[in-house]
Length: 157
Image (tube, rainbow, N blue to C red; front, side, top):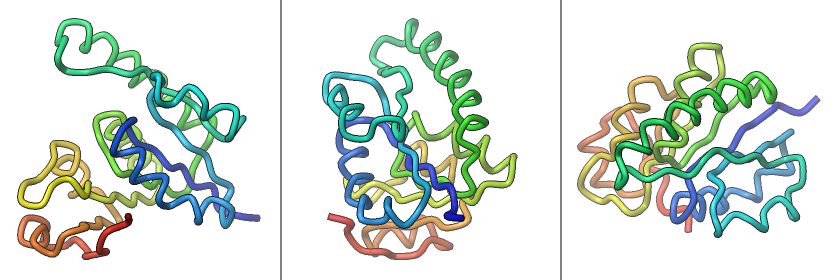
């Protein structure tokens, strides 16, 4: 029986980074979660029941974001128990934070890959997940100064 692995990230560059890991998908009983937006519409055709979507939200509209984020957290609980992953792999951002925290509380292993886009400062989600990650990977050697327990993995591109 193959391990259940959840790959989760926001859309855009974070999702592009996550998709660099797709060679791993067939080694596991995998599932993907990302945000629902125009860039992710066609993914259901390709991944069928192996992909689910969380609501897209941006902090630019703070008032509506608060409600969307609360809804995202509720859907996260639903998806976590539906999928029941043994490992959660994430490239960030806010979409993945609640899933990683929930997963840690219920015994999932957390693998977090800090974004390639940051070379000199921590991301908000990176700061949140670093203390609980079983494996925290940075893509720039300079980031080891900010995350001393991290592993340098090099670029995933």
